[in-house]
Structures are given as C-alpha cells and as structure tokens.
Image (cartoon, rainbow, N blue to C red; front, side, top):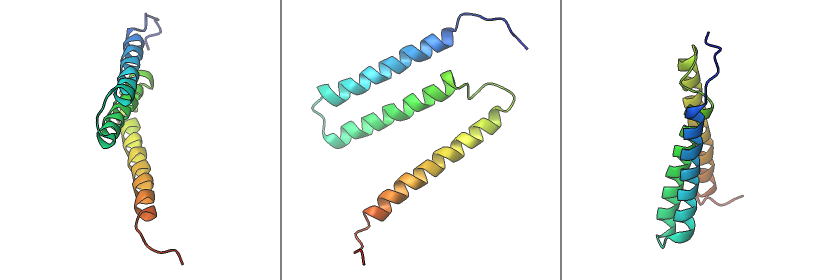
Length: 99
C-alpha cells in the first residue's frame, strides 16, 4: 500500500473542470437566446458530465480492488433513479381522469 502523500493534481484538475462546467452552464442559461428546450438539453448534458466527473475525480470510482462492484452499483442506482423520475413523469402526464 502506498502511503506516500503527493500533491493532488487530479483533484485540482477535477475542480477546475467542475468550475468550467458550472460557468458554461450559467453562460448558456443566462446569456444565450436559444429556445428553452435546447437550453434544458444542454443543461442536462452538463449535469451528466458534472456527475460523471465527480464520480471519477473525487469519489474514486475507478480505483480500488472492488472497482467493478462500484461501477455495477452505480449503474443500477442511475437506472433506478431514471425509472422513478421518468415513470413519475409518465404517470403524472398520462391524462387519465382522477376518480
């Protein structure tokens, strides 16, 4: 086990990329004249990129002996979150009358 501490270059790079994604999101949201649907798609893409960056750079998803287990559990959690969100939207917008 390597216990030597070194300068956390990967954390600095991850932080700078996170800041760039945050500022890009703000720029798209407040300074463009794109249609609202396009802006929402761009913001969603930046959010997914930011989440992936956080998982890899700060939560060390690709490190350690149980790396495969972490990835499988994360994919399952993302799938379940998507089912809950999109299922709720589908049920709430189905247009069926409430009895």
